[in-house]
Length: 435
Length: 95
Image 1 (tube, rainbow over the protein chains, first blue to last red):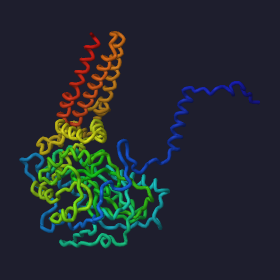
Image 2 (image 1 turned 180 degrees about the vertical axis):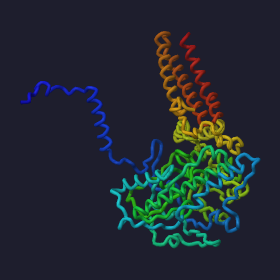
Image 3 (image 1 turned 180 degrees about the horizontal axis):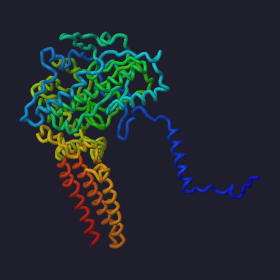
Image 4 (image 1 turned 30 degrees about the vertical axis):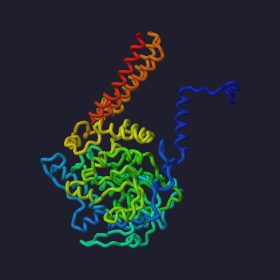
């Protein structure tokens, strides 16, 4: 017969060390298993405004841009290449080793594992496309997959025909053909655009304009190509059609803004909260639909900051970046001799022709404007603090902050010592022995 | 830039900032108890010491990111006002 100690049965439970440990382990396990998939579409953060649509005025006259009119295409028709890299062993940043680094960085971009800017078909492993349990899971898993393949940032937005080229230029065996978007990608009706970004190296970009800064930009394109090919294959395995495009098929910046990756800056580029403009972006169109579960555009004060800063405009060696205080909407009349500018949206307009002319003249892809931007900083706590402060302070103080940035030694371009900093082996821990 | 080949420079920095902050708080308590320092002087010293700690954090971070000019500027722009505030507070406390 089992005797029950009635007194001890009603004792208060004692929380000794062993019980505490058990409770801790059990509690952690319960939390880990019970926690739902909490990945959320971008809802912004402290000091960040979330918008339902792209937060810039688009005039009713706005028309889809024709890829035929980009500076690269118009110059190509004149026999001017996209890039004209040079080497000169007497100039820091232009040695033959640096030239080789830059050229090698294009490898994957120039030789992708699958064709870009065409529709890739489902693999046919499943009889019908895979159905995620819900849009939240689909959103979270697509983003995790992109990060798995190396994306620094990833945002997901609806396909918006406004940002697709009206006509796509296809180069084949020496000639070229311009086709309307819908004809260039027949039987393809994408619902979703996944925008991915690749961080460029801070120290390499600080050496701009040089072959070292080119190397990081071109390496970013190769990296993006790697992500796009793998993500396209991932979507194809899931049973969805997908079309990868680094710079083709549509406009990267508005898609990235729509996908909540940042704002547009004075240079007309994407300004991300974490990386500033030190990014290259690409996108994948897919038929997969996420119901209403898409990222939303965000703003965090970049326009006000750009109105007061002017570093990029002041440092631009070709004068391509606008000095206008406020962004403006251009009309068709304003750009009649500048077909490479698409009118009808409020922004600062870059003179792409001047910019590309300097690329060819300097033998680099320049990037001075990106490197000098006060938001282009290495990932350190004090820069994140300043960025956060900039979100709140009024306009005139932005001028002061931009000035202080120069005083602190940031944003000085054409710095002949920068290539040495890039190559310096000190503190790199190549053998992984040091922290 | 690492501590014992285990920690990153930033981790080491924030560890020592924690130690320095604790020492600062203990120092301020000591000044209040032993020297009967007035509250205005304590406020000045607290503001000054906090500014100095911030300057140290900034300068070391700037060195770690290989921007020595930023470290020098932080000494000038942040450390100097911190020293002035602390000195003023100290002189008030020791009056």
